[in-house]
Length: 267
Image (cartoon, rainbow, N blue to C red; front, side, top):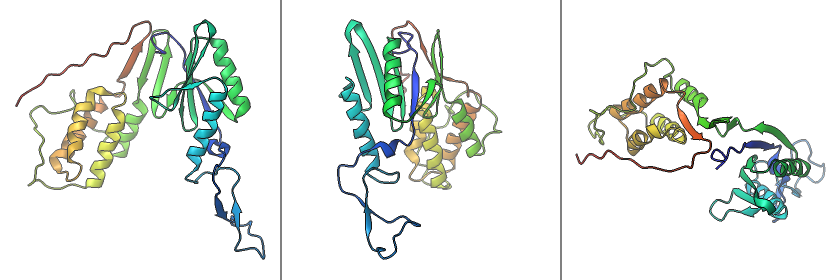
């Protein structure tokens, strides 16, 4: 929606988000080291606010900011609880998406966006990060032409992590002549390493639909991977080596239309 309507997307970061949460239940903790009162060593402390490491902290923080949003006239999306929408007279709209302590927001009215930012920074201790450039591992480039989302840095990081940074690139993510199967008689490989590789690749599919099919194929064999499965996974790395710059481009002024395509083979 932001790309179609040429709306800029901005980002805020809440400092010490979990410390803003209010507890609804009684929680007691041991006296912190260095603060134990002599003669009362066996007594405990009652928490008044949430702390990092407390299992109730994420929920307490969400309840706190949800209450604030609703007070400010936002409506919570019934299908995505981290999305809040504010509508005002004249067709003014503001969309806010929350992920733990990171917020991104966009809309069709600059004054409404500025009011929201000022209000948030008054209510909570926050950092104004300006236009969104990097969010949850996604690199975002906003321009008048549209919005380009990629994970170039993430690709570089996983290639280095799995010692594939010097590998030769290939033009396709999979070898069409290789038909993967359980390979029951094959040489077993480290399943922990294999799961780490596949997990890293699965996160990358957020902006790389070109590898989605082959990643789904190699993910079928995580319980007992063999050398052919590992080779197939490493080929994806070789493909990524030559396509680090690839990503998704959402063009401004163009109505989004999702089109599915398949080249099925009955064999």
